[in-house]
Amino acid sequence: MNFHARLGALLCFVLLWTSGASIGAAPVPPSEKHFVCPPCAQDCDTKVYAEPGVCPACHMALVEATTPLRQKAKVEEVAHGYVCSPCDAPCDTKVYDHPGQCPTCGMPLVEAGSEAAHPHRKRVAILVFNGVEIIDFTGPYEMFGAAGFEVYTVAGAKGSVTSSMGLTVVPKYTFSDAPQPDVLVIPGGGVGEASVDGPTIQYIKDATAHTQNTMSVCNGSFILAHTGMLDGLQATTTRGNLPRLASQFPSIKVIGNQRYTDNGKIITTGGLSAGIDGALHVIEKLLGTEAARKVAMLEEYSWQPGTKLPASMSAQNPLSRKDHGVAVIYTCPMKEHPKEFRKPGKCALCGMELEIRKG
Image (cartoon, rainbow, N blue to C red; front, side):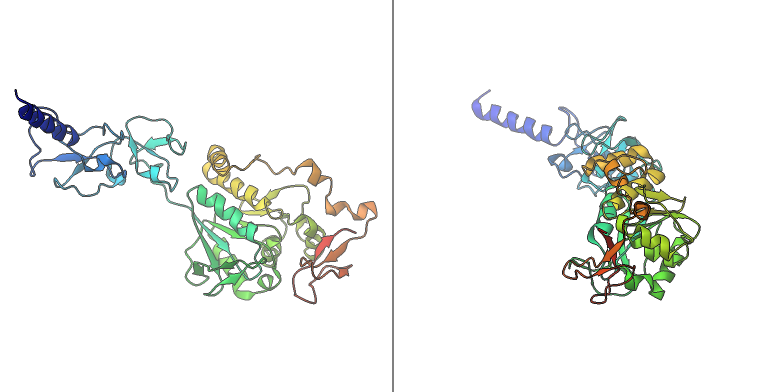
């Protein structure tokens, strides 16, 4: 065999190998069934096979295509194999021939076509308003989003709102067009107006009638308290606002030594980063401890299940200050408004709720 003949034979072999066909196998007729790799953004997306099985390149289960040119296959149509538990990452599209853990995200592989592979995505509505504290709503947003929940913001009207530190946020929905959430999050911040806003209070009541959990974060507990739904229940809030919550709402059992309180449906958390613990607790309630641990691990957050406060914070419980003969002093959260007050209320300059400072 001369050089040109050998070169031609080699080219034929390469073409057959890259097309996925076996040496000596007949080409796949356009009228017969053929199988392709589900879209995985790799070179094997272009290969066509005569028999079902597993893609030798990416190990995804081959699925039936309708034409030699192939239509994109949907993972939902795969009846056999194992898929990653939905995590909103590219690995959600991959199919494996054996159980285990997803090599990309670490989530457990479940049978394709099962309810676990295509669960109803829980909806989480996060209330936003002018003066909302950034970490109060973004912390829970991040955790619920990482858990695969459908998370969205909602406000009383269209248009942007401005956070307590000047961040502009455009809510996705208004009270009138927001989907019914499974979880409602009420963050804190400058809550003075939101606490007494009729449409806001009504939305919280209406949504909570059908939620699995409603959770306040930080001094968002004051908004929730104005709905009356905390009456007779345990609640917590920002550490510095515990005495004011207790004095303003005597029917609420204010707890000062817990990261969050869980009354079953109604949950309240302490200040700021405590909203992250509250969100992980809700994820734990709805999806299980292991799922919550995985979310915390993916987010690189040191999460300890349970309501216990760190010892350093428990020792500074403001509810015990009067017992130690220390006067309670209130100041505006805005540092440029240094005036001190002996009673809770609102700052005369900016209208923000006063917070407890050193007495």
